[in-house]
Image (cartoon, rainbow, N blue to C red; front, side, top):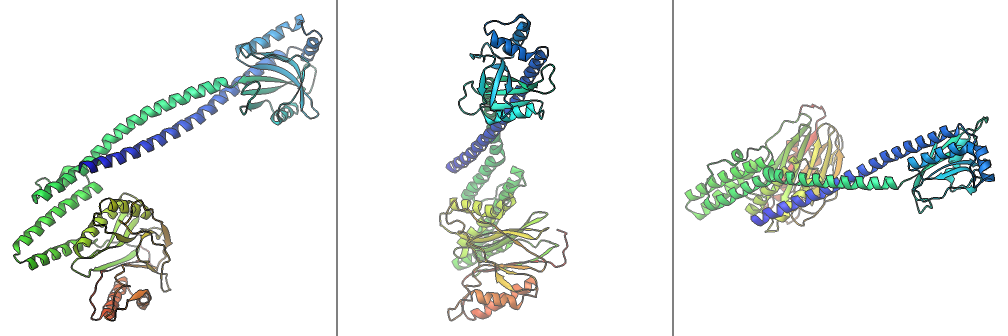
Length: 545
C-alpha cells in the first residue's frame, strides 16, 4: 500500500509542477508584453516632449539663416545663434537623446534630406551632421512620415527602429513639423532620436523580477496545494484503504463508520459508503455461509447474495419530465457481467451507461461492480463521456491482475436541448428510431475496450434527439443468442423485432425483444447476459426535471 500511495503523490506533484510552470510562463509573458507597451508609451511621451521643447526654442530663430551661416562659417558660431545652439545641445544632453536635428526633406519624392542643424548627446558617442549635409532617406517608413508631416496630415510621427543591426543602435525617432517665421507652409522637420537600450535593460530587470515573484508564488501554492490535497484526498483514501486491510484480516464491522469519520458527501464519501455497505454485505454473507453446512447449499447461497447485491446495485427509477426511460437486465447465470446505470449529473443532465464485462459468473460480477463505481465517480466529477472512458480505462488497467475487460457505451443527455453526447468503448452500436420512421443502427465507431490497454483516448459524438425519437441500447447477448441449430439471433432479426413494436411503450419494446429471443432460443440454454436500456424523448415536453 505504501508504494501505491507514493505513486499517487508523485503523479499529483508532477501535474501540479507542470500547471504551475505553465502559469508562470503565461504570467511572465503577459507582464513582459504589457510592461513593454507601457515603457514604449513613456518613451513616446518623453520624445514628443523633447521635440516640442526644441520646437519652442526654434520658434524664436531663423533656422534657414542659421544653417546658411553654419555652412559658410563651419568653424565659428555667430553670436546671434549661440543661445539657440546651446539651448538645444543642453536639451539633448539633459534628456539623454542620441540626436536632435532639423532637416529639410526633398519634397519631390522624400528620398533625400538636408540637415539644417544637428547635435549629438554627450554620452551617445556619435558625431553630429554638418549643416547642409544631404543624406538619403534610410527607409520607406521615414519617407511616409516626412510626407504626412509636410502635408499637414499629422501633428507628429514616431518611427521605431528595433530590427537588425543599425549604425546608431536600436532607437525611436520622433518627428514634428517646424514652420519658419514668415512662411505659411511647413518645409522643415525637427527630429529627436532616443536610444532603446534603457528600455531593454528595464524590460530585462522587470522580467527577472516577475519570474522571481512567480517562482516564489508557485512554491507557496505548490506546498499549500500539497497540504490541501493530502488532507482532502490522500489521507481519506489511505483511511479507506486501511479499513479494507483491517476488514480483510478481522472480518468484523468497525465500530466507527467510515462516512462519519471522513465527514464528506463527495465521491470519497460515496466510496466510503460503498466500502461500509460492502463490509456489511460481506459479514452478512459470511454469516449466511456459516449457517449452511453443505458445500452445495453454501455455494448457492453465495450466488443468491451476489445476485441480490448486483440487482440492488442497479439504479432506482428517477422522475424525468421530458423523457421516458426503461432498462432491464437478465443474467445468463445467477450473476452476470452486464450492467446498466443512469443518474442525474445535475438538474439538466443525465448520464446513461450500458456495459458488458468479459467472462461470466462471480468474477465478471465483481469486475462489473468495480467498473460501475469508477464510471459513476468519473461522471460525477464533471467529465465528458470520452474523458470518462479514458479515465476509467486507466484506472481499470492499473488494478486488473486477471486482465478482464469491459465494453461500454455511455453518454450524457442534455434535458434542455435533447442533445445526446456519447462515446463507445468496443460496445454494440445502438439502434435509433427517428419519429415516424424505423429503427436503424447508429453508424458510430467503437473505440478499444476498457481495461485492455492503458493510455487509450476515446472519440466523442453527438446526436440531436427530437420528440418522438427512441434510442435503444443493448449488450451482445441479444445478437449472439443461439438457437438449437447453432444459429445466431443476429442484427437483422434484432432490427426487425424492434420495428415490429416501434409504436409501443419502451417497456413493451423490451419485453417483445425478450420474448423474441426466448422463442428463438427454444430449448437452447441462454449462455450470455441480456441487457437493454432504452430512452424516448416525449412528444409532449414537460421540463420538470
